[in-house]
Image 1 (cartoon, rainbow, N blue to C red):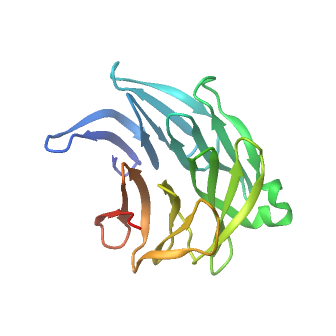
Image 2: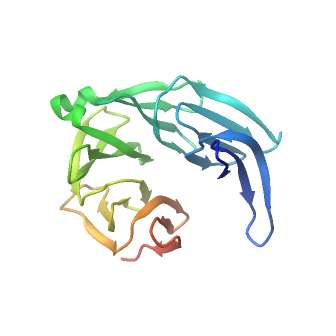
Image 3: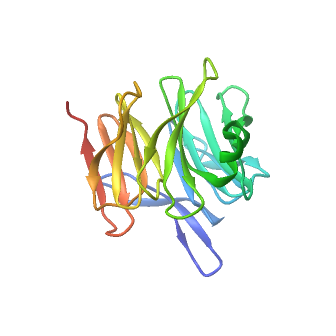
Length: 229
């Protein structure tokens, strides 16, 4: 997405080995974008748009949110993390049958702690939802929070280095970026995290096939990493 002085820009599609083409213009403040089989969703601060690839047309999907923090999509769910007011955040889900977002849980699940953290990423894997939550005060450390979509059980599973941000799932691990590292923990939730990348600041993370991709905020490079045991 490119923008001008009024934060109005274009959503582009690029085919590897081909060229880039615009699929939508006059879009404002696009901060999050996810693509699936035949459809693309993008979000600005308070609304989400759906683009149908076959129809080459975009449609409003959801509005009325405030400060959308992240959006995730796979074959089973659309997940959205958003802040309504300071210290008041929600995680929403769409099971791909209703076409509507339903609140799954909010800051109250953490008691008094809920008001001093903010979601920065959300991902689904194996029937479980993982959220990266960052403290709003210095040094901005945080943790990974797990919600089981079958049993509704919830757990803070691991702490993170400062600046926890985007999150993705690949194989038997959950990965997340922080200010100076890329970390992971097994989905069995055993032990602590390990750093698989240092001196990198992932601004976004995506898992495709057996490869993890992330964009480095400082260098401007896109990195690829494959899980090996």
